Image (cartoon, rainbow, N blue to C red; front, side, top):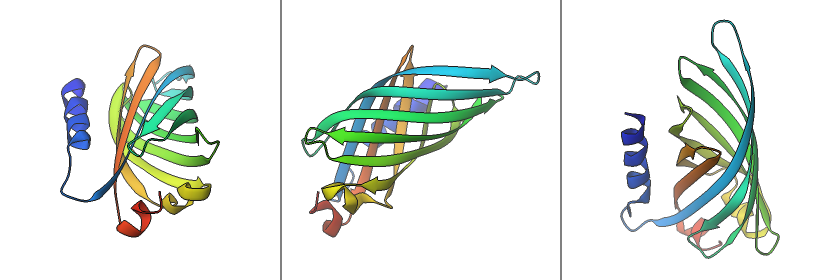
Length: 153
């Protein structure tokens, strides 16, 4: 069931919506985890990921993420932060939040800081979908932006 749900979300996020200005950001990362399992089967998981990203404006670069998840009854409450650097060494930072199955889910990403052109994204929230396979994660977000923001990217 989770795979049907996440596949549907990737399709919805990947579908072109009206004529809005869209910013699409995708990354794949290799991740590691460390966890503590409590007697009631609740898990506390620390996550570290490193990978590469690209967007629909022709930028690409590296991404580094740190996060934590508390998993109870197969539902993960995840909070993570990522730093991304593009091919010109310009950086931005995002926060990821979601409450869904650990292996796949949807959530909200918020741009929390940015340099140069990415300063225009600070405060913007967008939906994202993520799926894990073995030690890899695959992430996609799609934002609809106002003209005054999109044209400054």
